[in-house]
Image 1 (cartoon, rainbow, N blue to C red):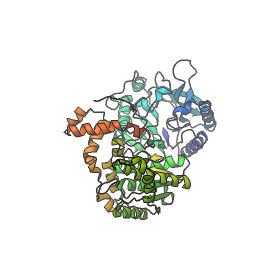
Image 2 (image 1 turned 180 degrees about the vertical axis):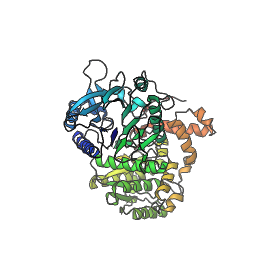
Image 3 (image 1 turned 180 degrees about the horizontal axis):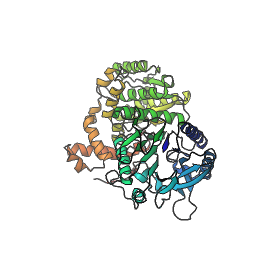
Image 4 (image 1 turned 90 degrees about the vertical axis):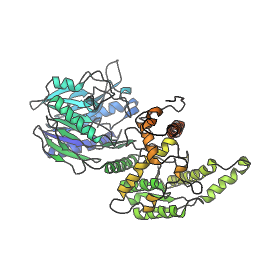
Amino acid sequence: MRIGIAQINTTVGHLEGNRIKILRAYRQLCGKGAELVLFPELAVTGYPPRDLLFKGRFVSDNVDSLRMIAEKVGDIPLLIGFVEANPSQKGRDFFNSAAWCHNGQVEKIFHKTLLPSYDVFDEDRYFHPADGPGTHFFKGLKIGVTICEDIWTHPVIASGKRYPLDPLKKLAEGQVDMVLNLSASPWHNEKNDLRKALLSETARQCGCPVVYCNAVGGNDELIFDGRSLAANAEGRIIAGLEAFREDLAVVALPQGQKYFAPTFVQSEMSDIHDALVLGLKDYVGKCGFKRVLVGLSGGIDSAVTAAIARAALGAENVIGISLPSEISSQHSREDARGLAQNLGIEFHYLPIAGVVAAAETALTDLFRDRERDVTEENIQARARGLLLMALSNKFGALLLTTGNKSELAVGYCTLYGDMCGGLAVISDLPKTKVYELARHINRKSEIIPQSTLIKPPSAELRPDQKDEDSLPPYDVLDAILKAYVEEGLSRRDIAGMGHDPKLVSEVIRKVDLNEYKRKQAAPGLKITPLAFGVGRRIPIVQKYVN
């Protein structure tokens, strides 16, 4: 059978726009010879719809949209994800569902069995689980239908997850001829090989070919990479679609074919770059903005952010603003201007000395007889935040914050200062990875000035300031942060890895102390297994010491 895989980029809640895109992809794949067309999980609504599901007409409107799609479907079936209301008085109000549309109607509906409630997922809040996967006969084949998490059951791959049912075991016992999986699986930088292993194991367990159609695009902090796959009955991956972009392909099963898109396998830095570009592009476009604004300090973080913005939106839609204070070094001013010239973006020079002086003058009486400290340093950062937000309002351009994950973790950032903005582009990228990404951006020609790459990082809020005055070297800091934040290890465990126990305790103290800052931060694009965002729900007020 020739399966059409429709790897499309939907927008949450844009029912009409999604429907138009769905039908266009369906027609194109039919024209390519598909005998069955497969779409991602919840493609009708976009994923994840979250509390839109509780709006009075949302679910009924999505069903109406599904019916309009089904009416346009001929003798080539279409299998697509949508939300169905639960008619029972028991359990959750909705089902995460898939509809088999054929000859102008919805012929059969399937429900998701396993509902993830970890990391960024909260499906148990909305959906009621099925008793098991469904099957459907088509062209003499018994086809098993699964939705995303339903195939994440292998002990090695699904370590730590506990589900009462194993949908794949049921399908294997039922001797299906093919498994189809509708998915909306967000990307992070350790997931690619995991997915291929998952699909191979699914095929071997069920003893039949498997086709996996994943969503692509950015919705809020989540980035979906596509990379839809097909495996033959022996578990060999025989087809792979493009990464981080829409793609339509027809895969012949069960005999299969060798086909890998050019960007299916690429380096970690290429993946991170493409993910951030896609996440930023979709966040800006789907929120209705056209232009973005970046404060250019002459440092590595703002340089990488601006380069990603140019790649995502084009040079004509990026505005760079240099806001030097009296403390800002000449090389930082020159690096900011040089970066803007290399990127070809609009550039403005806006000194903040007058604003800082005015604020300090206004505070003179109240601050009398008190030593200068971090308060005066932060006035500089907040002066920049004030001016950048004013420019954002006046120009109608989204302000991008430029802080990285290392700084956000330990609170090395200023509320209402450098944290001002509408999207934190690199807030899930540790400082060491920021440098790696910068070198990747410069791999063909110098975009980010070399002096930006080699000078010691500094906030430049006091004379001769260096980040290492307040923080350990970033390679040490990032290793501790990964162990504590992403892996959940205790200070004793981290010290046992060879780190100085006093340093570990101090880093952990800073992470815990600054939870209140992160709760007020702009949303950030998720690229690691655990980001500071909806997947990490630590209380602000807590006293646990581990």
